[in-house]
Amino acid sequence: MNAPITMKPLSHLPDGRMVDAYTLTNVHGVSVRILTYGGAIQSIRAPDRDGELDDIVLGYDHLERYLESPRYFGCLVGRYAGRIARGQFSIDGRDYDLDRNEGANCLHGGRVGFDKAVWAAKAQETRVGAKLTLTHVSPDGDMGFPGELAVQAVYELTRGNELRLEISATTTAPTVVNLTNHTYWNLGGLNARHVRDHELQILAEGVLVTDEGLVPTGEMVDVAGGELDYRHPRPLTADLDHTFVLADKKRGVLAPAARLTHEGSGRSLQIDTTEPCVTAYTGWGGVALETQHAPDAPNQPNFVPTLLRPGVTWKSTTVFKLSV
Picture 1 (spheres, rainbow, N blue to C red):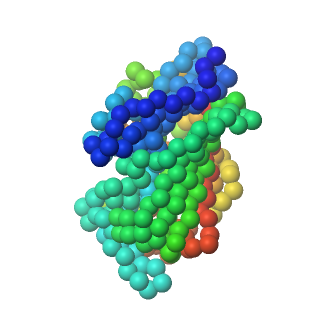
Picture 2: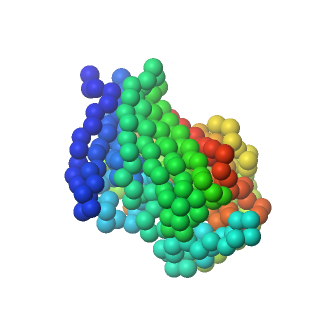
């Protein structure tokens, strides 16, 4: 039987910081490999219906690819997942200008977001499995965001083949926060080239309307009967780049959000979350299902707020349940 937690130093970054890889393994042989660079899930090995293990997420074999790639494979995204229009927002009458890394907009926190941070790590065995706690402190003014933000992300792999992700954050000044994980899934395994043979279900009541720059306009359209109606499982044959608003807009309690299945292998992934939205994106042979608040919420008063003030702890929980 493999050890529940192992750590392997990978290499140094150009500035001298060391990047490590931690592997969490449960009693069924399911394993999750996480890098301290970006808090990225590099691989998840899970059995098919015949018990054969294979990697079901997209990741790079070498650290150098993570440094060069714009694809956010498996990483923790922050300070703000998604786009903020024109890289601007206001809090209490004060305007803030952010790093604009996608045309006029700020995407996923700017050019040097949490995906490029080296997170401090602490691993431990728990009564239900193995846990990796990652921490990072983003200074006041980082990429233009106000307040020093202290973030903790806890990955826990359970004996029940669940990967739990609990993220929390506190700030020293009013700020906006929207944190998520950006893993791309392909339940067909390492050699699968597309996800068109998967079925997807998203328990959403609507989808956000976006402009030509993929920034929300503030409107939501009902998915019922439309081409984006994934309330019941259906083949994932169309390309997706949409933010789905879950049936209970406010969320805040852990509840089912999405399900991905692959008939060929028998693998299934259920996602439960406390978040109000799921952003679904297909690309590079995988599908990302990002549990989060809405993009550009700081500029859209009818969206669930993302404002965080001192003295309050921002919290988010998502559970990825693997089964066959």
